[in-house]
Each structure stands twice: as structure tokens, then as C-alpha cells.
Image (cartoon, rainbow, N blue to C red; front, side):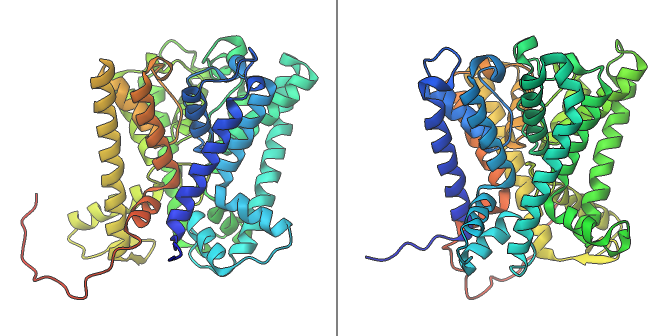
Length: 440
């Protein structure tokens, strides 16, 4: 019998699928819900997918529907999904003292978007230590905000939960005790919660490779890898430009001081975090479009965030500028980008837009809901964001299945899906004749 050889991309896809299956089964246990009956399979699989894919879309309020055990399982899935299933598996192997095989190193390289196989094990240790330190500091920073509100034990639990959820860009919250599906709208006036959550989201969203670069080279920006430079500059622009637009065009009924926090927070959270401090249904049409675009772009490669990634967006934007300037190649910081990278970026952009538009149109047709609301929801799913206009809990089974697939595809990544599908395809030995094609 011929042994099945799985590619690294296929291993990643299967790993996430198995993690979702295990999480689903645990959430169906009677003691996983507050009523002691256990979740239905559709609710459990949706929640498990949202947690493993660090999205944050929910069909049941996390604080009121799930028991302490259920919340613990969801938090564990968020942690696994944020770090990456492969990263967690490698970490367990390292702790057990077993040797890391070349196949495992190669899979890890693809999972965290590392450039080389060499140093992957060291980078895994850096990711584990960094995650523990950042989430620990986030927890300590949130204690003064939550303990006075909820008491010592509950305040500690809320601090741990929201620190992990924010760093992993998951968007799950426990504030439903103040109003179901309310997210952080009751905390919009609190600078401490706003600042800490935003910092955790940004730190988790720029990627582990970028932070390794920062730790190694400190403030010497010129010594950073080109990828780190692109990520930092693009992320900064995608935070402050939309925030300025939100400040001057949205939230007119909010005092100026709170409007600054609301504008910054919505700009940051749209990049795959899933929390919100204002009612998103109050946004104007242009505000909805801006948030939808930010959700599709998402975070950065090798991070806890989803979306088509900041580097994909930057590559396509720079390629367009190169065409406008009649330049032959795409450039960043005095370096030329290879044509294969540009083609990959174009393929990822096309795939995300196709899935986003197709999913939104299907849900709108199935449910009879406005297309704008459905597109916002599908952007939130494939970008693994989690913000919502409130329609997810009302959707039928088929529409929820569409969102599940979008969350899964959004978390494992566009290139992983493409490579997994084409892993056994052979490259043609010869090229076809070339002919000119007019475009535009």
C-alpha cells in the first residue's frame, strides 16, 4: 500500500481542522454550558471554528451561555489558534525532549511565514516566551480596571481572558454580563482598557518575525528586514489614517475626548481583533466601507491575525504605483520585489475578494438581508476579525456554514490553501508561445 505523503500546507490545513473538531466535541459536553445541557453541534462547531481561527463571531453570548469550563475551553482554543496549531505542536515536542525532524521544521517555517528553515526551533522558543510575557503584562495592566468592577477572582479571570483574546486578535469578550453581545461598548470611556487592548492587538498583529527583528536591532530601523519595515509603516498608516477619518466623519454624538479613543479603537480593532467600543450599526455608509476594507487587509504574516495581510496590500499598492510611474519592477526601501511575489499577492487578493463577495451575495440571497450587512459579515469572517452588525446569531444553518468556511480559509491563509491544492501538480516542462494582450 502506497504511503500518503502530505505537503506542509496540507498538514497545516488538517491540523487546524482537527483542532476545531476536538474543540467542537468538548463544547457539546453538558457542563460546557451554563444550563448544563451542552451546546448543539451547529453552535459548538461555529464557536470552535471562531475560536481556533481567532475570529470572534459568535452565535451565543460567551459570558452568559457558556459555563466556566466552556469559557476555559474557548480560551484554550483561542491561545492555540493565535500561536498556531503547528507552533503549539512543535512546542510540545520540544518540551518532551524529542528531536525536531526536518519535515516538522519545514512545516513550522511555512506556518509562521519564516524565510528560512534554519533557526525555526529557536524562533519557536522566542514565540512561546514572547507570548507568555506579553499576555502576562497585559493581564497585570488590566487588573486595576476589572478587579474594582467584578471583584478579585472574577477580575483576575476577566483580565487573563481579555489579555489573551486581544493579543491573539480573537475578539471574544466576557462583557455580556452587562448586556448580551455588547463587546466593550460599556468601556468606551475607560482610557486604561482602550489603551491596553489596542496595544495588545497591535503587538499580536504585526507578527512574531517583526518583533524578533525589533528585539534584535532595537531602534535601528535601517537594519530591519525589508518585510519588517513594510509591516511597521503599512500598519501605522492603516491605523492613523482611518482613525482620522473616523474622528472627523463619525461619532458626532460622542464628546471629543471619547471620540479620539473610539476612532483609534475602531481603526485598530478592524484589523482582525473583533472588539468594538461603539455600536457599529451607527456608522455611516462610508464608515462601514472603510471598516470592511480594513478587515479584508487584516494583520501581518506570521502573526496572530488573519486577513490577506499588510504585505499583500502593500505589494499590490506598490505594483500599481510602479505601473503609473512606468517602472519595470516593484520597489520597497531600495529593494526590488520578485515577480513571483507580485503574482502570489495578486492571487491572494483575487481569492479573498472572490470568497468575500461570493459569501456575502449567497448569505444575502439565502437570508433576505441587505447586501451591505452580509458583506460586512463575510469580510469579518474571512479576515478573522469578529466585529458584526448583529446578524450572525440570526443566520440559518447554511449561512453559518458559509461563515465557518470563510473563517477557516481566512485563518490558515491564502497561500497555504493555494499550495495545498496544487501540491501534487507538476510544472509543465515547456512554456507556451507568448502573445500580447491589451488590458485596461
